[in-house]
Image (cartoon, helix red, strand yellow):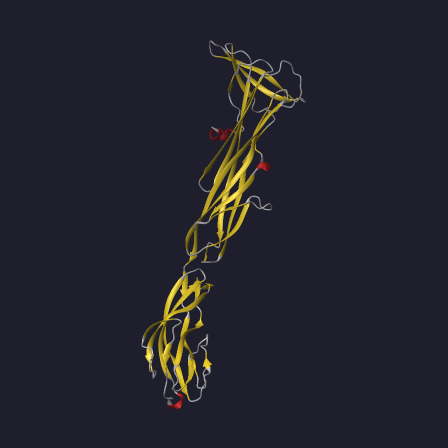
Length: 398
């Protein structure tokens, strides 16, 4: 396995003879394996093995080999032990400190050499979210960075490594941990870095990022005659890591501040019609003895807000859905009774006597309002108060 061979990237293997004729070449074997481990680590291992037989002459194209007999080993069948050193054409030894050991025997004629080498690429994926803790609804930045550590087996006899400029992040997959998953293409200016934003609601989350990586592994074997035999093998590996401890602070839904208001409507003496005011008022004026259709309004003095971590993160809209008429002075012949009313249903009311010192008749109501917050949350609130109705002699209203 490649993993077992990685520790011996530069080691010279003890090789048994392979039956072959002089100058024969049996090819190159390049194997690539990928695997991952915890903590966002991925590995690409490449192992190269090749075999050749030495030339009959010392004709030098680029390399030649020298075979030195060491000993006869054992009894029948007697084996010969050789050291093989590879030289360049100028006579410089390629492997002076680690000549290849070759064993031959009379039952296996011919001299063959097999060399093996392994290379390794370790990839590390780091993931972070900034800030890790923030008010719900705030924008966060999710980052990821892919780095590599390379161990190359590169020599004049044999090579095994991952081609560095072949490495690519084809795309990023980000699971934000809240049910949202996004596929993000790499940035040309940051091919091995990810930076994207996301808005989190309240709660705790774990962000998982996957880098989809491709590349090429290279293996080469150079015969003693200087002939290169090489192979390039593509690979793909997915590397995943996570960032935990991400949280959005709880959301507070603060209620609005609402007071009841009224909008009188009716016909004044002389046939002048007074339409209801859409805004409404906490104090109203109405002529004595004239019937009044009093429309109840919800006057929002302060709208509700969404707050998280002490920061306002959203607003709201409040509307009147219904109200309860709690009573008050009413001299109408067909006065509206106390009870529940729809928001657009008026109270029939009448005041026959002005009060001294500009005092007002109280119209007591309890409002039921519905507040819809920016995130779609709906809350219902109740507010009780009186509307002050001042009776005047002349036909005016406010």
